[in-house]
View 1 (spheres, rainbow, N blue to C red):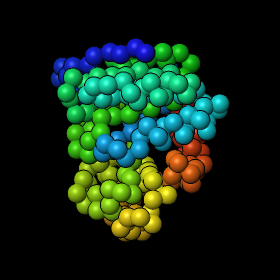
View 2: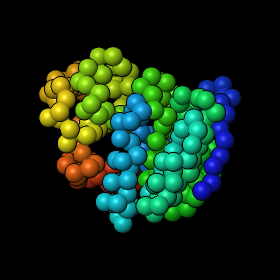
View 3: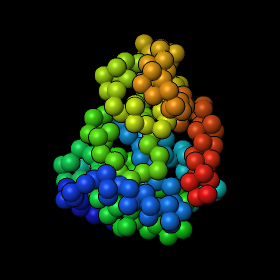
View 4: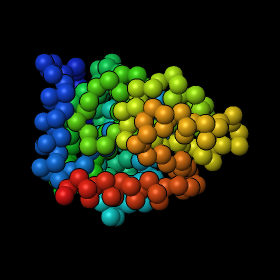
Length: 219
């Protein structure tokens, strides 16, 4: 397992770096998907399910960003996807420069879709453009339906919202309709996918969206 150490990127304009990285990914015909969420929302479980389900249709890679540890990257690599662990040296987010360094260090030959599993945090990752073609917010049922009210920027900047752990809905005070309503007020164009990586509920709709997003990206 390769591990690279990432310190803060020194750049005059992260947005400019992000646009350059998007152009690079577009040229390489690789769609990068930035996954953002709080810790424990189920990012790695979701990715594991996606790799198992559509890994035969698309060649997938994963960049695991974390302050320390390589536990998640090891799990992903065992499933057959290209993976790299990016240590952020205490930083609570990835920026475009850090993301590009991780992508370049990844065994990215012939990949179709690369997932960036951003640092678990509902504030900082939303403030820094990573250069991704798609941004996805992952929100789990146990977190409650009020997160759109508390962290509006994250929901406003995402192309899609995944509501995970739907298999636990009966155990928590979570109003799915109310959550959707709050999110759509912030971002009317966002796609919402309630699902369970454990049971497979809703996974097909999300995986088809990933496939369609990739096709649109390489046109």
